[in-house]
Amino acid sequence: GNRVFALSPDIFGSYTNGTWSELAHMPVDNRPVYFASAVLPSGQVIISGGEYNTNGNYDRTVLYDPVTNSWSDIPKPSFATVISDAPSVVLPNGQFMLGLCVTSPAMGALLNITSLTWTQKKFFNKIGAWCDEDGWTMLPNGDMLSVPTSNGGQPVAEVYNFATDTWSVSGSTVNMLPADGEMGPEILKPDGVFIAFGASGNVALYDTVSSVWSAGTPMPLIDGNRCHTTDAPTAVLPNGNVLFACATGPGFGNSGAFFFE
Image (tube, rainbow, N blue to C red; front, side, top):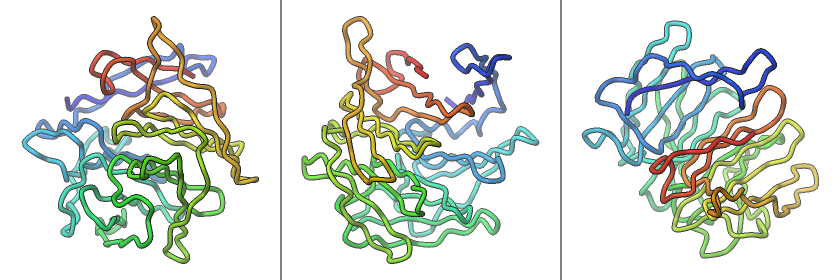
């Protein structure tokens, strides 16, 4: 639906024991499911696309202002066929970048949040033929790390270098992370360790100092069923821990969600 909630910690800083509160609704005709999102340097929240959305609004982008508790529309990229469940990342200069879906060869879109204008970004020599379902995360050195879903059936990751405008292999993730064309969230911890949650239930860790991948602890079991993070969200908490959501049934959110810190 178009309802939005915020999770606030308790007096001890615990989000596990935190409280949910409802924010302003998104526009009534915008009800995205599985979408690109980010918190911008300004504190505003951007939501773009949606694998499923009201009236086929797969390329709609809206901006939330926490000061006024209100939403506004951002013009869509004129060159985008569809945004859908695109990956996204906030660059060091504050720009928001999308990986457009259903475009081959792969293509991105850069949003200047000040002028609200989009610039086309063409990707060359990317391992994955498209960006659909991928996860993107900025690394400390300014590169971007991604686990592509269109990976030829291999447990592989790739890095995008903005200076040279090129992609390169960053090694094996050890275990297969994507499953059925889906991927879980990816996030960088304050200690420099990158975590990739797989739709397969596997987890991989990447040390940004040594550039080495290792297998992480698999998703927990709930009632004998392995959790997965297909299309699920995650976030780094102020204490450096990671909060992630997972599910045991098909898809994410169709049969309830579980949160772990």
